[in-house]
Image (tube, rainbow, N blue to C red):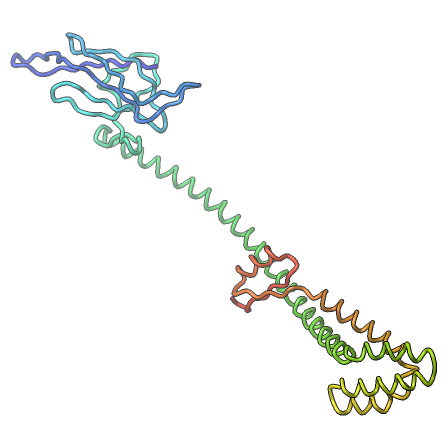
Length: 290
């Protein structure tokens, strides 16, 4: 606590200073925390004695608050002052007036040369801090640029590999789909023909003829239908092999399709990064230069 001595007087017709009556009200500009206590911004009122003086114990001002002083006397004013941490009594008249918004000394109460020196020192401190911050920012920017270049190169390589893989996968899928379409309609007939062919040659011939008729109806082109009709007689011996090949081709097609990743498109690199994060197993593409 700092003891503040207040002395308020007024002029008189005799030229001597006359004490005034009234009080002085001190209020902190914000709530304070002292250990487990919260000090509320409640006025501390010091009444003036017959000599116009009063003594009051006040908390030293902090870095984010000051004292608001109201002189409840004739022609009294309101001041915002900084109270130092002192073991000796301090005169109220010597307290430094501060700007309540910045808590910096009020320019009207600071000598011009002191204010100028303070501003120069503040500018030097700010310049040094700015220089240090600029150096740190430059190093950070350099590191970020190097990391971005590495990531861009890796992304470009990944995109090229993904494009090649996509082409191969597309070709494989198309081939598998064509094979599946070509043999899908014949699979049931071929399996039936293979079962009948194993029992007897006559049954196989009959089943082969039926398979030829079914193949001719299911053919996608005239040339394929003619070939199937010509070779239908020998289908009895090849029926089992055809059924096995058809089953393998169907399995291959199903596997190829199931392994194809989800392909997404994005408007730009930023959107592509977001989609990649949300869909880690998908391939995301975006226009070059977007």
